[in-house]
View 1 (tube, rainbow, N blue to C red):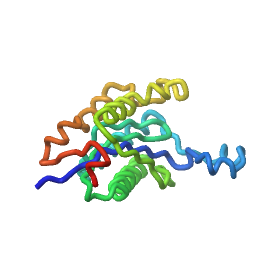
View 2: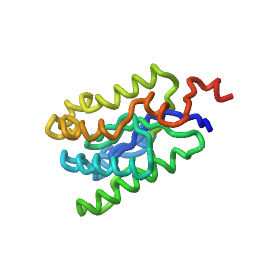
View 3: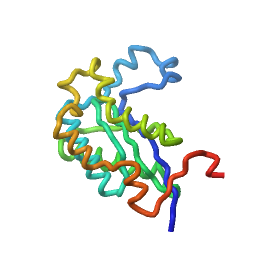
Length: 186
């Protein structure tokens, strides 16, 4: 049996860390600055990485790449078309936040409710998204500094790399095929 999969680039932010452009026009700068954004230090990020890896295994999420930063997470996953992306990401966020609170003693919300999703259109887009996620900590180096980013730690990179699969490996893993364009869906 062949089922078609889609690759998705997913981003979600920590609780109270980002306000949309639309909402920022309605809210005062003072209010936005007092949101009490959840920021993960380097050790917190390592815990989140381990929790995400546990969740990836628990929910059998085929993962190409992911990166955890102080205020957001990026992932590139493959999902069979008949699976609900919102349920999969909701399960992963719920599992990782519950584990984080249990291990750290943190009280309160960890993640923002929503997440951003982008359907990967073709091999070029897949390669760009993979590189973007794998190297996203370099983009934020000036903002956070190397000591605040766990992705520079070789042990963390190794854990992430071991939890991820190459896109072709995902396609070959099962009897899955991937469509290249929207036209193939019609």
